Length: 113
View 1: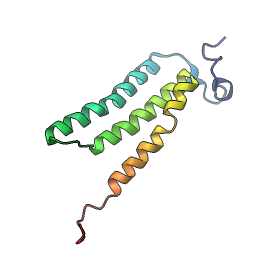
View 2 (view 1 turned 135 degrees about the vertical axis):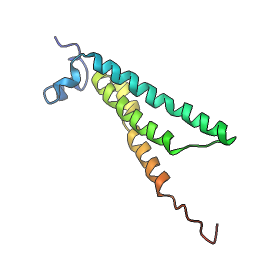
View 3 (view 1 turned 45 degrees about the vertical axis):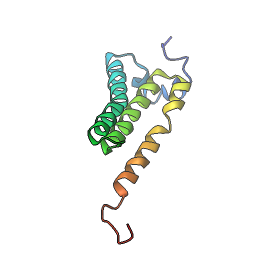
């Protein structure tokens, strides 16, 4: 029996994307890279805030949030554990929206402000 066959998504996705459920050292590498990327965003935010002597949330924070959560979600799909997948399922959309808002703001000052 396949080690992930008891997962909740494997019966639906296993036939279409079998590599998702194959054990490999590369899945572990992805898990570590995803965790360090997602967690590293707080180090970046902290360093920028310390330098500015006020709370700063740089664009890099949102990029690390987006790509870290995407990688985490892919890794968690491999793990096939419903509570973990649900915890990350909506995060990429939220961080993509934050990036959109970050880059959408108008850098030109208006007469009102």
